[in-house]
Length: 166
Ligand code: GNR
Ligand code: NI
Image 1: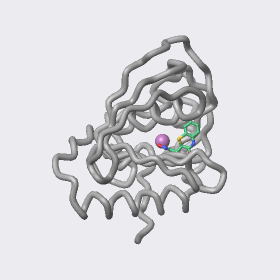
Image 2: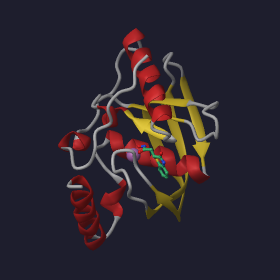
Image 3: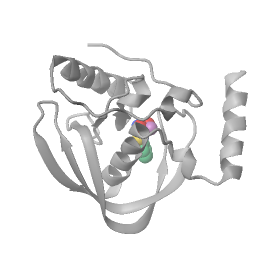
Image 4: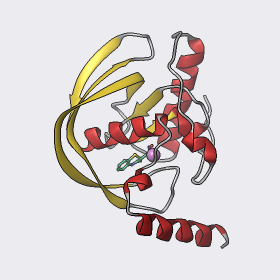
């Protein structure tokens, strides 16, 4: 059990593309446990392995109030089942202090494996649809601020620099 350090923007490792998990062994279970601990410690609703500098296609989420409903996604694949744009104010543990609205498809169908290597398929709407799209983006080296206008991104970069120096 361990709390792992979370990479912070603009660390270039957040831009790496994570690799497919090929073998479901104890090492993967350990990573999942440590990611759940790290997510809870940071009070997040999701965490991608990329954010803890592990470049494997592993995501953990828990949108419940009391962290009683974790969902583990290994090698997640996503299909958009309703592309109506839905706006949600997003934040990211790798970009602390920044919250901005982002539009994403309303409904997605996700295929993934759990930590035992069992496949599952589930449709998501609402906060969970936003969350899983945000997490799969991390596995592909993409951040929510990439969806904002260049002007807004520049303002955020300046804000982060300013916060760093104080
Ligand atoms: O904790 C998180 N909250 C959140 C809120 C709105 C949209 C997405 C998220 S995910 C974020 C945790 C995180 O950075 N996961 O990568
Ligand atoms: Ni994030």
